[in-house]
Length: 38
Length: 363
Image (cartoon, rainbow over all chains, first blue to last red):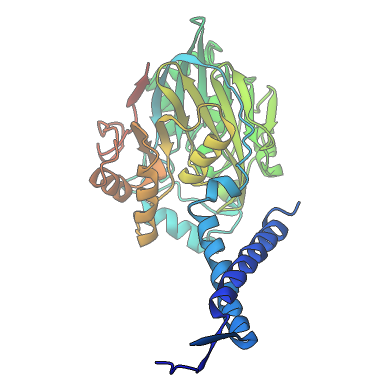
């Protein structure tokens, strides 16, 4: 357990959320380019 | 405890999140949201109309009598890709044959009643051995119908020996019978129609065809009469043949009835083509004719999958015969497919499926 006064690093959780959004957008873009391209 | 934003942790999280998000989106879009995201299949459906009823009579489904003799003829000539007009087919000395000849033939007589009550009589294929075909034509009353020109036209499903080489059995009785052939007919086929002989293949036509020959291609569904259509398939076939056509009848209150010669395009391809091109194609009521699965009575495990796939189409009557193969019929019956039994007459060996002289009536 972190002792009192110890500094804990944060940002991992928010990184996952931001990454997931980027991932979905990336997929949709590639899907559009690869599958729906005429 | 104090928390401090770490760029390193954020980037690690974002990398994991990006991968997860990407693959999760891929998985969901191909499953749960498939219908919302993927474009709908565009179907160009043809309404072929309807008929009241259909009578299908098997004139001859016995193309040859001894498989080993047939296969030896093919092997001796160089294999399955050799030109069928150059193979010396065995016509004498075959114990199981018709008067010693191994040659038989395939031919089916169709009688369709249109909605206005008119009856259209059609001949599908003309067999191989003229002597055998003349006998069968006489026995089933086809000879009389041909002589009186009661038959509307002759459809050649494909150019194969057992479906086309017996042309003189038909032209002898009705020289100017209108004909439909599939695109892909070779020059030899047209030469045979005109009366050319092919001595090496023990093939001749002493009664040249004098009527109109219409070549049908695969670009569209060819509606011949309301409720009666032909579909052509661009398919390469053994013995250097190309193209096959098959019938689609739309029987009122029943559904579609597919009638084939050999079905070299494959029964599943045929059913799928009908589903995609014919209005009402999702409801096939009956299939009749050769299904080309185990013509030489050999079996491959992939044919089991074919039977499973066929079973899913919910066809209610299967009047299979000819190149379907007895093993296939046995397996289909075991799988619960509705195979219509025959009577094993006129040199058809077994009653497991429709044989020579047997009828299938859809009305």
